[in-house]
Image 1 (spheres, rainbow, N blue to C red):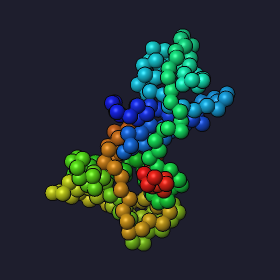
Image 2: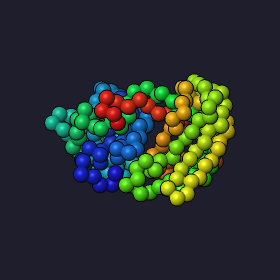
Image 3: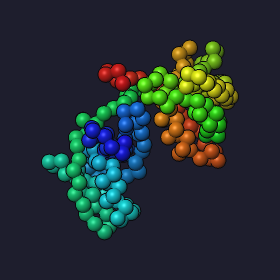
Length: 212
């Protein structure tokens, strides 16, 4: 998030060739192409790091030192930046995927375009701040066969439903719908290029012991 009372939520978490960020509603976990000399990890203020890298874009090295200081080195400069311990970084989801689906980018974008206008934006009605994905009664898995799935969103006054075919199902979907946070759907829709010929994998992971 742009601002937060919790400093760690302003950070990007770097570890084992991956980078993570979260606002406790949406968590992004992406591979980070890198050459790892010595394994290290830490949480760095994302906007401060971006400010440093914008001065000298290109390849950068991050070295986590002692006493909460990391060195960010580029061909033109070397900066020092504070970092926090990885153990303090909040984890929204953990565990193995339990259920989900694979869908083409175009089909996913079309479905979100049809239902997002009616997803509630009233934060006090958190149960409506989602897009529900409903699976057919004969759904089976893993990853097959091709099935119809339904995307549903409502604000309590209107409801939009988009039925999409050709989804490959993962796991054994039940009668309980898969709930995708509205803000997650909005971020995904903004970032996906509908012209791309690719498959999107959507998975629900088991919650951690804290029930996140």
